[in-house]
Each structure stands twice: as C-alpha cells, then as structure tokens.
Image (cartoon, rainbow, N blue to C red):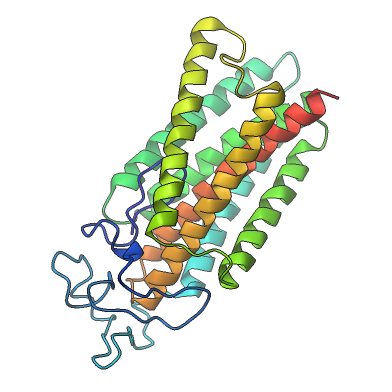
Length: 301
C-alpha cells in the first residue's frame, strides 16, 4: 500500500503490481459489497507473482468463488485499526496546531518569528512525508513526527489567516473539511462514486496538472513578486480553490477504496498506519484549500 495524498504517486496497496487494485478485469469491493475477484485482481491473494503479500498467512483465497476469506485474527488490518491510527495521527496534528496557535503569536512584533518557525516545521514535515511515501513499510514514528510538525505549520498559518485576514476562517475551514469528508464517504458507500482505473487516471492527471500549475505560479511569485500569475488570488484564486477542494475529494475516494481493498484482501495490520498517513495528508490538503478560499472570499469583501 502506498501513501495517499494529492502530490505523491499512488500505486495502491500492491507495491510491485502497479495498479493491481484498479484492475478493470477484476471485480473489486465497492460500497460495502462482498469482495469478489480473481487471484490476479487480488493484491493480497496467494497466487500473483511479485505480490508483496503473496505469503500473507492472514489472506486466504476461497477456491470456489475467488473471494478472500481471511480468518478473524489480530494480524490483519481492520477498519478499527484504520480508525484508531487515523484518530491518533489527526489528534496529534490538532494538538500541535492548537499549541502553535496559542504559543506563537502573530502580532506585528512576533509574526516574522512565528512564520519562520511555521515554515521550517512545514518544510521538515514535507521531507518526512516524502521519506514515508517512498518507504516500503510504514514507520509510525515518522508518520507521527510528520503529523506533529504539520500541525505546527497549520496552527500558525491558521492563526495568521484567522486573526489578520478573515475572522473565523479556521473554524469555517474545519467545518468545510468535515463536510467534504462526510459527503465523499456517504457517496462512496452508496455507490455514487465508482473508483476504477479510469477514475484513478483522471484524478492523477488532474493532480499532476494542478500541482505543476501551482508550482509555476509560485516560481513567478518568488522571482516576480506579488501572486505570480494570479492563480491563488482574486477570481482565478477562487476558481482554483474550488478545483483544489474537488481534487481533494477525489483523493478521499481513492483513500476509501484502498482501505476497503486492504481490509477485504487481508492486508497486514501495520498497513493501517499507511492508510492513516494517506487520509491525514488528504485532509490537510482539503483544509488548506478551504482556508485559502475563505481568505480570498472574505478579503474581497
């Protein structure tokens, strides 16, 4: 299972089989339905060559129907594992964000120092995120360190926006992020969102284009001053803010698909940390897009 986020490459739970979880020729679990598929479409089955979980003793293949029939053991990832790991990661992020908000003032005399600390924490968090994204196994200390540092960055950034640009923006962004999460989860479980290879390809292409465009805008802003090409302010900023939120919602659907497949196919328990890592990164993406969008909207009032 690879980490899931709007920047890093997604290859799903099967590290060596590429898009195994999005195999168009295999029936995959969706919307809470039974897991039905062939050994080739199952990244946790015992047959596919090169499958990192081929010898997983917790994933047993039903010979007659091809559906994974894993026994209830503590060695397999469960939805409770994912919930607990995600709650731990997000909880740590929220705690450090609250501490940064309270302990790093953003008044005129201290904003430079506070923003310096925040940017430093954000850069280190980004490096840790890249390291974990390319690791073959989950590293809980690395994931928790990422969450703690990301919390510091978000805490100061939220304080700046809330106190100096748009009063109440942080709470509005939190509520917006929660609403998107709940909406995507309901739509996914109801079967309104079908995650397949085509959906995956569309989301990845859109994410690549979005990130490249924002990177070019940042370069113009650094060397030319202002907001570069204007993609993150004014009317264009509003449009790209909405697109960023929609893109984050699509990545949430991919996150849910990966978690569902991992549970159905008997992923090892430690994979729950990677699921938590991916969900955390996606939620951070959505929150930041909401925060930026609210700041633009209220700043234009």
